[in-house]
Image 1 (cartoon, rainbow, N blue to C red):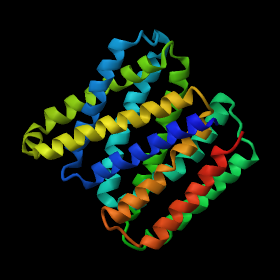
Image 2 (image 1 turned 90 degrees about the vertical axis):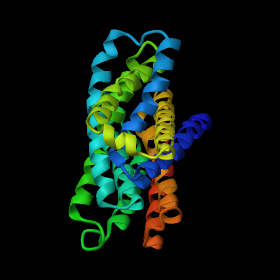
Image 3 (image 1 turned 45 degrees about the vertical axis):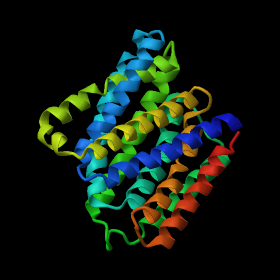
Length: 279
């Protein structure tokens, strides 16, 4: 990967960790997720007016990604209700590079070399360090299952969009239509929970919307990077967000135990670096 591509994905990683912290800290996470989806729709409308059509061939990918993202929002809400940010986030993001690399190998034929697979194993060790004892401790078994389910969802939409953005006549237009399609999420959340939306403090509404803008920017950068490098490498470097999330969880929310969470984040990042350095 070029240094420019690495910097693009690292910026996306920080933004992704930050908006997850916004969701975790929200009083009403369902409404906040609706506001985040709204934060995708508005920039999406701007993109589709600025760039030419991505082509009809990518329509199935946009539809599939929209459905998968709906499941992502639901499961992410459940996972953060059952566990801490610095627990849930590394599990979901630590597992997804493994799943994406395997998916890309079988679907696209993107075979990773030995150094990349060494990174995958290191990531797995980091996740095991992080999850040690959480079923017996403060995190429920359901929370672990929800986090793992989110990882599967992340891998699924990453593969679908990774293929879709490459097939598109225009990558920015594909991203725009992908975000516009999230209008369905906005309508559903606002229509079924309008009273709760009205009761949300104005500051929380603005924060949720800005979280959506940050989320959209982060994913847009990743999709653009997918046109420059293999999916497995991009997804792996993106997961440096684990470090950012662990720091935010410990320093912002006061989550613990600190030592094991930070150690796990560092180990996961070492594995990500191995994959990112693969030629």
